[in-house]
Length: 422
Image (cartoon, rainbow, N blue to C red):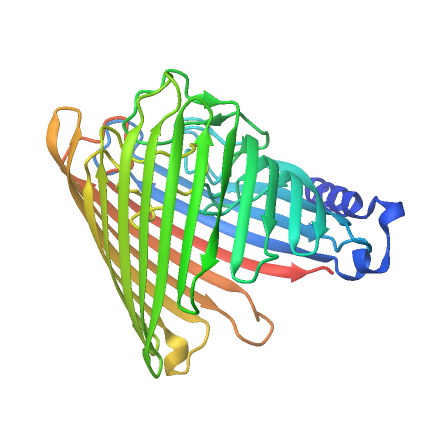
């Protein structure tokens, strides 16, 4: 499949764009260039249980993710370019089974045979400060590009990250377009939060500024301000502390708080989101307990499309972020390397939430149980090949209606392998 015209075209265009700067072709620019092709095979099955419409979504596809990151030219200001080539090829789908976001296509529609996109970003570096403009994968507590399907989501815009001061990371950006994880074109940004009335769900831009500071060796604090134009403003705080308890033991505390309000008269956003996760680790075992509480007139505010909200109880299917919802999480992880099986990992968690309203249901409840099993081959011909199975069960005490995610059984099987090219 690597020899298909689409795959070959994306690869050649991406590599060509990266090297098409003859005046900059200095030693560091070429020598520091990194390139890799990730092959990602993704099977997705979601059974909607009692949903009166489509009974399930099931698709299988092969993805090709070509990442090229150049070095920088010499001088006080170094210049470079990054490229991202994406190709998804349908292996199995059908009308009545689409809607997994593995492939393009809404519920009830068929998926195309393939889809692809090419993104470029120019970059400049001064000391430890880097400015990028173009196609971006952003990941911070204000906004995070999702990479939980066949291909990653991207944004168009600019971002500057500075690490010139030891222990301090400053981060600011402006985004104006969004390419969903199952799309080929950049679209307007839109509202994706819970419970608010938004007159116009599309926004011209999303801006953010903030950073993280390592207060001590074990304590890191973070703060971000963000604004989805004419829809919401948000202040987000994060505090992470890791307490060593002895040989191969630690206690990690992750505290999160966000205050979201409306921006202008286009919406009525009003939310306070509190989250806490405490994790005790010993040898290869980790035991976690989490709590999340929404208060205010609406649920959590975040950008729609393919983004991951910064919430402790944002899990495989649900985010437990409805207005006034309270939720608890119990989680267990085990790394089999501790007993001599490196590369094998296991995770399971249970989240339950209640105390919120859905339509006429004034005491809505829901729960979700997740399980992940992953293995990365350590040697031989399959070295670095990764296999992961993700299973989830979600239930609620109210009719699903248009929200087909509240009661579902889900399985995902992902096989991935990255080929170094440079």
